[in-house]
Structures are given as C-alpha cells and as structure tokens.
Length: 338
Image 1 (cartoon, rainbow, N blue to C red):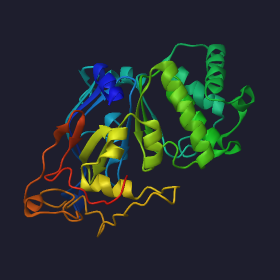
Image 2 (image 1 turned 90 degrees about the vertical axis):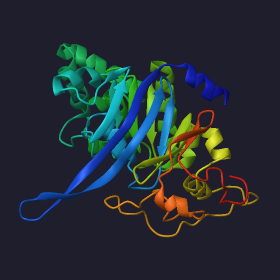
Image 3 (image 1 turned 30 degrees about the vertical axis):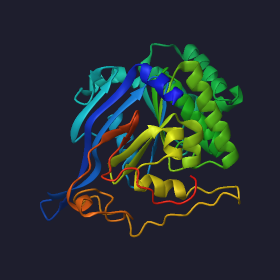
C-alpha cells in the first residue's frame, strides 16, 4: 500500500476517459455496416510516471486493442486520451508526430516486427534518419550505443533478423522502442513468446531501462506470475470492459471481482502444501458483437443474481486505490489462499 500511495503522488502521464473502440461488421452486396464488434468498452484509467501497469484478461478481452488505440494505431470510436495533460485522440497526422518520441510499443512477435530483408543496424538507423538530423556516422554511433544498452554487441550491427535467437530479436525490438528516449512504452505480450529463462533476462532489462530513463510501462500479458513480479498495479479486463484495478499485491491478496478470483485460482503453484480450489468458469467468452445485457460477466459468473442480468455495474472505488465493477464485489467464490 505504501508503494501505491507513492505512485498517487506522482504526475499522471496518461489518462483515458470513456475510451471505446468498435470494429464494423459489413455484409451484403453493398458492404453496409450491420453490426459492430465492441472490442473496448468505456475504459477509464490513469497511469502515473514511472509506473508499470499490468493489463490482464482472456484472449479477446481487448487488451491489445486498447494498447493500439492509445498509440493511435486504431482510431477511437469514442472517448478521450490525454498524454501529459494534452488530448491526442483528434490530432492530425503531422501533429501526432511529436508524440512518437514520447510513446512507443514493443510487440509480441519480435520476428514479425522486423524486416527480414533489412540488417538490424539499418533498421535501427532508420529511426534516427526519420526523426533526427543526424549524419550517417552519428546514426551508426547511436545504433551501436543502443545495441550495447540492450545487451547486444557491435558485431550484431550487420546481421539479419533470422541470425538471432528469439530473446535477441526482442532485445532489438526494445532497442528500437527506446531509441528516441520515450517516456511511455506499451509492452504487448513482450515476453510471452520467449523461454522462461529468457523471459527473466528481458524483464530484468526492462526494469533496468525503466530506472535509468524513468519510463512508464503498460504491460499487457496473460501471465499473471510475470505481472505480479513486474508491475505496480494491475487492470483486469473482460469482454472489452474493465472489471477491477488495484495495486498488485492487494489484487492477489484480496481480489474483489469473481472473474479476477477465477483468473488467480488458475495460477500454477509450485508448493504441494498450498491447496487452492480451482474455479472452472462455465461456457465460453460471449460474442463481443452481441454482448450480454447488464453485467458482461453474468453469463459465466458463479454468484450471478437477477440484478446482474439487467443492470450494468458501475466502475467504483471500493477501497483506496482499489476499483471494481461488480454488484457483489468482495463475494468469495474461492476457498483457500490465493
């Protein structure tokens, strides 16, 4: 809780207000819009300077779409995004260029995010060529420094992406993300494609860079163990909706939303002496093009009541810094310690 209070004293670097992202569904000869996939639904969020905010949830819950919408890779359907107290969602292309240096992204697949026909040195040098007035020699020196920052060597400058391991390719992705000295980076499943031992090395590198350059991270992941180690706070999403937000240790100790409790009950435990009842949710994730009425989780919730089927719960602060959207927040569906 002390860490949470310290975070709240820091300046807000990113603020989301009612952010929505719908994708049109077109059909017929004239390709008219018949419906929408509601990928992100009314997200309200504040992220502090120097913070690592974890975003978790099942596949298809809208985590990556939210990240892409923040960076402008997906246009918003509705809502406002403020970065350093300036609204950026309606800026034109030329106006958005000044935010490129401040906001970057590390993608899930390090190989797909690199051009296989381009040497790594040229790929990184291209960043400086577009956004700075450096000469060729200065660009090469800057790239070599970047490679050293992420644990690679000068000899890697002239190699192609296929000549690197998965962990090395992700280091290249990190180098590209920090090249312009950003203050905010979205890590979209940045370690999910890596072996466990390599994950630890990359996470350590990200923490080192955060301390050195005062970075703020939005860490999108499905691995709750990694999130608990790496993040300060955790945002839980379900079917495009935010259902719970809390400081990481508080969330793991006292999850308030039934969906969060179900997620935490699925974490593997190395100790055979710790017994936790596994919560098995019934059914599949509903169709985001036709979400349920009321609470989006009510079709799978073990403690569903009549009000859950008709009235959508409000996003409210249950305790200091602990937000939840549930009519029966705090009702336990798990026996044993989480």
